[in-house]
Length: 271
Image (tube, rainbow, N blue to C red; front, top):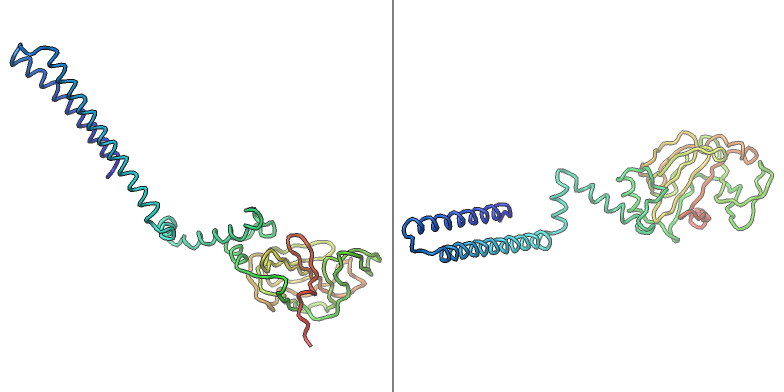
């Protein structure tokens, strides 16, 4: 029952009771002067108390009705049904997507993963469905010899720079124009350019693992694209000034939460 309606009824009853009390008083006054002021006052007071009792009864009923309706809304309405009512007209899918985003970022304390910032909710939801771990495998993005290995504990010689330094990825010998394939299924998170590695493509592959491809030209993908393992994502470019002595190559690295991992622990060697 509507609370406003009940309140209005209660007010009307109080008003009618007051009018009735006044009418009784006037009637008694006109009919007989023997009725004392004390008796009339007592009658009026009784009527007032009766009206207050009615108001209290209605207030109690209103509170009970509100509790009952609240109980129905909270306990009897299924959560999935409630979601559909709130997100009607095709917005249910968006709600599910947002829930997936929240689940995907639980490991980060509810914070948005910086690698995914700027992506659409659909792309972020797709990342949440990906799975990659210590026993997962990667394909060779291009075929060729490794001319600079991964090493973050000691140092590796870089011919063009003529110096030794740590190497967060591997450098695979190749030829300009060779197609570069996605090492595994994933979502492209960003495409950027640096002086050292030229055009780089970053790909989320699941569980916060990121695969990065460098020295690329003519990218075939864009940020937010879902790609399958083996899909062409770009082509080997002319090497930057940092890799002139090494020649045409592809830079490839694997990381998780900012920590670089040797890609060769996951790449499958074929006979």
